[in-house]
Amino acid sequence: MTPVSYFPYKNNKMFVEDIAISDIAQQVQTPFYCYSSTAIETSFQDYQLAFSNQDALVCYAVKANSNQAVLATLAKLGSGADVVSMGEIRRAITAGIPANKIVYSGVAKTQEEISYALTLGIFQFNVESEPELELISKVATSLNKTAAIAFRINPNVCAQTHEKISTGKAENKFGVPISKARLAYKQAASLPGIKVQGVDVHIGSQLTNLAPFKEAYQHIAELVVDLRADGHDISVIDVGGGLGITYLDEVIPSKQTYADLVHAQLGHLNCKIIIEPGRSLVGNAGILVSSVVFVKNGEERQFLMLDAGMNDLVRPSMYDAYHEIIAVNKSNDTLKTYDVVGPVCETGDTFAKARQVHESEAGDLIAILSSGAYGAVMSSGYNTRMLAPEVMVKGNEFAIVRKRPSYEEIIKQDITPNWL
Ligand SMILES: *Cc1c(COP(=O)(O)O)cnc(C)c1O
Image (cartoon, rainbow, N blue to C red; front, side):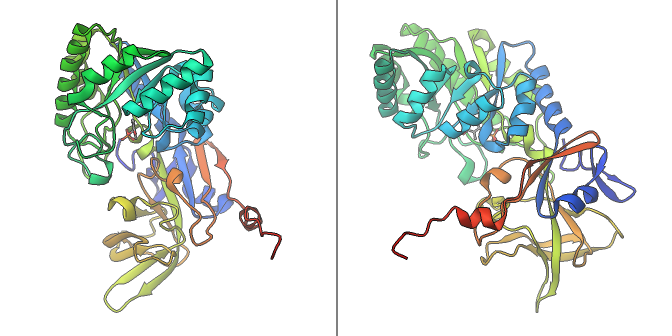
C-alpha cells in the first residue's frame, strides 16, 4: 500500500473510496483526519491471509489509532488488541474486542490497571520487569485469580530505525534482558497467581528490513528451547509489531514475506503466534486534510502556512518524520518549493522544509499523507487549538467518528478555584 493507494485522484480531485475529499471538507471544515474503512479492512485481511497456515492471532496495537470506529472495524474482522494502558483496554472492550483476545504490554502497569485486566480475564500480560511480575503476583493472589504471563524479552538487536522508536537494544527501557530471561522465568514459576504461558518480543517500529526481526526471532527460538528444558510450558510466542510502511519510497517486505519469516524461525516450536501490528494496519489508511491559510514570501523561502499544526500531527517535529504533502485538488501541475508550516508558536511546527508541492494559494486544500497511525492519537490542544475531528469513509458514506470540540467545552474543563 502506498500513501496514495486509497486516496487517488479522479479528474484531478482527490477521492477517498467514492467521496471527494473536498466534499467532506465542505461539511467538516479543516483540519480533519480522514480514514478509509476499506484500507484498514484490506490490510487486516492481508495479515490474516499471510498467517492463515499458522495458529496466529492478530492483536492490533491500539496505540497507533484508538478511535472506536477503527477498533470496531477491526473487531468485526476478528482482531484482538495489544494495549498499553487501562484506557486502551476500555477502548478495546467498548469496541467489541473480547478480553480473551487482549494482550497487555507496557513498562509501568499500575496496581489498579493490573487488577482491572485480571478481573476482565485478558489473554496475557506481557511483563517487562521483575518488579512488575511481583506486583502482578500480589494482585492476582489477592483477587484469587491467575495471571497468564509472557516476559517481554529484550534481545539486544538494532532495529535499524529512528532511535525514538527503537526498543530492542540493551540500553532501552523495555523488557527483560535476554541474558536474565531464564532466571526471570524461574522466579515466575515459583510465584503464586502466575501462569507462565509465553515469550514476547517487540524490537521497534517502522522497520523496513526483515534482518533485525530474523535476528530477534532466532534468539527467541533458542530461548524457548532453553525454557522448555528448564521445565516451563511455553505455548505462545508474541512476535510484536513494527513492520513499516511506505511514507516516501521505502520498499517494505510484504506481509506474506514477514509471515514466512516468522514461520521459518519459530514454526518448529508449535506455539500460538501473536502479532501486534499497529502502523502497518492503519498508517496509509489515513490522511490529515488541511487548508492553506497564507502563502508567505519570506526573505529566503516561500512558506505554505496551514491551519493544521504540530499539535495535530507531531511526527515531523518529534521523529523527523517524512510525510508526502500534496494538493487535494490539482488545478495545475506546477510544483513550487515551500517550507510547509503550521500556526503553532514553535519553530518545530514544520511539516516539511524545501518541499516541492503543487503551487497553492490561500484557501486551497492540502493533504498530509500516511497519517492514519500515530496521528490523531498523539494530538494535543497546545495553543488552545481544537483537536482535529476524525472522519471515516466507507464506500459513498462518511461519518464523523470524533467530533471537533467547541471552545466552550475546552475552557469548561478548567476549574477556577473559589479564592479567585
Ligand atoms: C507500539 C507497539 C506495537 C506496534 O508497533 P507498530 O510499529 O505500530 O506496528 C506493538 N507492540 C508493542 C509492545 C508496542 O509498544
